[in-house]
Image (tube, rainbow, N blue to C red; front, side, top):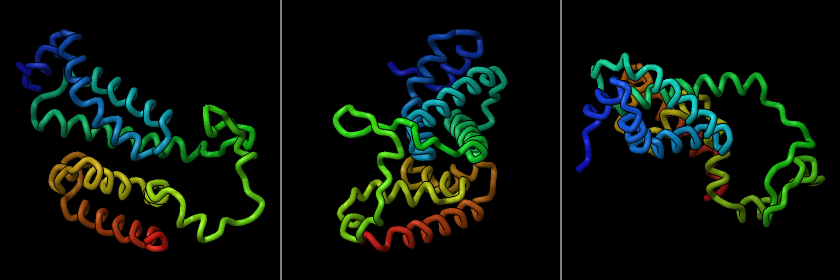
Amino acid sequence: MKIKDSELILNAQKGDMQAFEELLEKYDRSVMNIAYSYRTNEEDAKDIYQEVFMRVFKGLRNFKFNSEFSTWLFRITTNVCITYHRRMKRHSYDSLDKSIPGGEEESLKISETIEGEEQTDSDTIGGDISSHISSALDQLPPQQKLVFTLKHYEGYKIREIAEMIKCSEGTVKRYLFTATNKMRDKLKHIV
């Protein structure tokens, strides 16, 4: 029999680590999906994931059931994503000697992947569509990217997103409308 979130929360607030771990297991995939879609770098997503659950662990004793646990958790997740983005923006330069995954368990330096000539249209069109989508998503401003991800990748309703990021439904709709138009504009060349 599955235990309800409220029981798990109450038990975790009393120090029951097993209850906290059950909450973590129940929501870990969703948090990781949001983090990954926000950063698209596995290491960054793992850092965000870890920071989220550290904050949840520290703040759970103050959870007052004024909202759904998932809303509270995803509000923390969105805040961590935004904070992480700001922090990374200040330190966003990679060395050309940095190793990145290559094909068949090899690693390459960034400098080895830079081409001397521009890619042709046929290379771009023939490329992986999901990489184009990820690239377009990465170019969105943080709030638009977050709203787009929560709506289209996680399936949340406008009202739920508004609660999570503490803004009006109209603002969420505006972010979503703008993000969708920007994505459509960035991706029109691959259709």
